[in-house]
Length: 127
Image 1 (cartoon, rainbow, N blue to C red):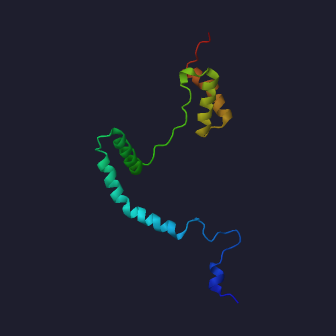
Image 2 (tube, rainbow, N blue to C red):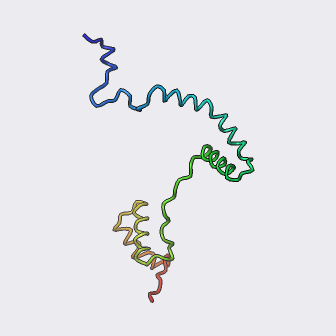
Image 3 (cartoon, rainbow, N blue to C red):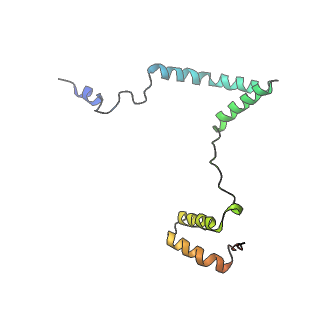
């Protein structure tokens, strides 16, 4: 008969006994690397003063990445408003109003009635 303690620690079907998938050596390497981190940062700070601009630039980037995180890539920016047609502007405005909590029907009614009536969004003359 198996002891209750053993049965409690046993994996359930579909569970992994090592969910992170790392060996004990992995943890040891992490501890060693973290212990050496202050020395690595000191060395990078020394390399900031390198006469070789490439070395200094790499050191700068490494320090900035560690201090603030790597910069995120920004998605492509939408077209400038001046390049959008009236229909595209209308759709963008409706989308923003819906995101703010208006129903699509109300957003379209507001766009259809209010802006032109109060002069918020002057319509371009069609050529």
